[in-house]
Each structure stands twice: as C-alpha cells, then as structure tokens.
Amino acid sequence: MIIENNKNEVTKSIEQELEKIENYIEQALFYARSNTVEKDYYIKKTSLEEMVKDSIKKNKNILIPEKITLTLHDLDFEVNTDSKWMGFILNQILQNSVKYKKQDHNLSLEIYAQQGKQNIILGIKDNGIGIKKGEIARVFEKGFTGTNGRKIGKKSTGIGLYLCKKLCDKLGLGIELNSIEEEGTEVKLVFPRGNFMEMK
Image (cartoon, rainbow, N blue to C red; front, side, top):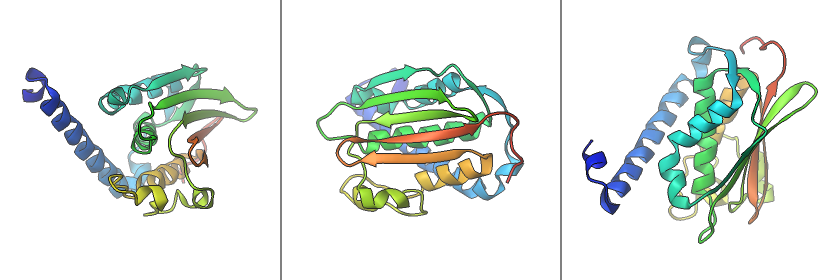
C-alpha cells in the first residue's frame, strides 16, 4: 500500500525487487512440492489464451519497463491441464526472456499456438541473446546455468527450466527448446489431445 500510494522511481525499483523475491520464493515452493505434484493438481479444460494473458498480467512489472513488442495470435484453444502449475511454467519462461534479453534492444515476444494431429503446441519466442549450440541439450538439467547464467548480473539459479521440465513430465506434457545464439530462443509446450493421460 505504501508503494501504491507513493509512486516514484524509488518505489518502482523497490516493487520490482520485491517481485523478484516473490518469484524466488515461488520457485522454492514449487521445487519443494515437485515430487508430490499428484497431491496438488486439478486437471480440467483450460483456455490457452486465458493462461497466457494471466501470466503476462502477473509479470507486467518486469515486462513493461522493457518496452516489449508483444504479439499474441492463434491462442483460441482449450487444453487439459492444471492452470496453477501451467501458470508457474509460463512465468518461468517469460522471466527468462526478460533476464536474457539483449542489452540496448527492446524485447520482442511472440506467443502463439498451433494444432497438430495429436497435440496442441504453445510457442513462446523471443529475440534475446540466445543459447550456445553446445549448451542447448543441457538447459533442463538441475543447476545448469551455462555461459549466460554465469554472466555478471544474471543471477541464474539453474532451477527454473529444470522445474519446467519436471512439471511437464508430471503433467504428461512435452517441452522443447530451440535457440540460436544472438538471435533468440523459442520454447514449445506440447499438450496431447484427447483424454488426459494417467498422472506419473
């Protein structure tokens, strides 16, 4: 309330730092629960568009300062998933896009969906610094930070994408990452069509 009633550059900076702390706490809590996800999920038909917009809204205070070019299209699909766990996954991906943006370049984000024969794919594509070719295969490993994560000021934990992969496995989803160094990164979440598979 103090921040809301005293908007200035200092309080905006404080608010951003508080959100970073909240994100780290959320990450820690999801990590602690990741081995017992089956005790804390609710699978139902969920709008991809609503999930994406909710995640963008949650992250608005880190996205807006980057003056992002945001493109959303073809998101009019419903998938069987748990919206809370998917929200966490989307948050991690969006936060990575901001963390690994190019210096002195506005962040461009494209979020879209496409329908396959047996699945629906949600893609999140950015124009960030990308990932070295030899490191792409390791991005889902626990604790792996890579060259980018060791750069000054990035403060990478190597836990975010690891958790995304682990939660996707638990939810019966696929996750793929493609990247070109200095061009950007694209993450794809693959939702099987039809009945939800048995929880792992």
